[in-house]
Length: 186
Ligand SMILES: Cc1ncc(COP(=O)(O)O)c(C=O)c1O
Image (cartoon, rainbow, N blue to C red; front, side):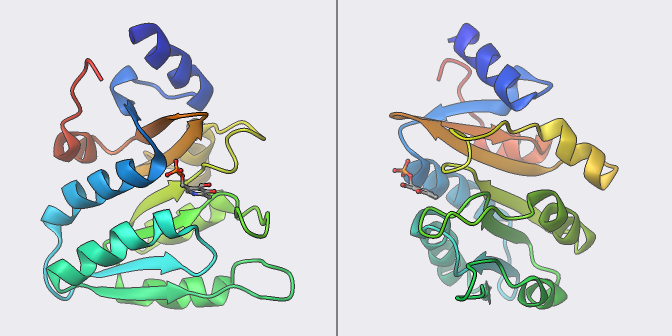
């Protein structure tokens, strides 16, 4: 297991093995992590999801938000070219959301989002970031240190990816690892 974790840490260019968590699939891992993170949410807090995302990166967050009395802000995309509407994204950040969930690459339209820019924008609003990289991971490298350089501070986002039937969750924020309390044997 350590070897697998080490190989995946290499893939993500992660600095610590404890940042790598395995699970059955993206959907169930996202339900689990959203449930863990949402324990910190207070009624009236906001979260942001996008209409470009796979449902697996929407419903877990929306359900938690409903349970906790939080507000969900939706980011639109341009139907003509399938790109994310960055003005809509910026507007959704105005309420200083707790978390912003978006995808790396769209399964429906093949759009590749400007992830580093979106991370910067979300972090400027002091939001946590959760990125669904399921569709991107088989096609290109994911260097989490690059994201760190982009925003000139510690990356505190999460990148999720999968290969065949194993899902890999990359947790960066130390506090998030504490919420999740992953068992080192998994
Ligand atoms: C972009 C994207 N996110 C999430 C999922 C859900 O992944 P899983 O089947 O691992 O739950 C899919 C499934 O195809 C997907 O394409």
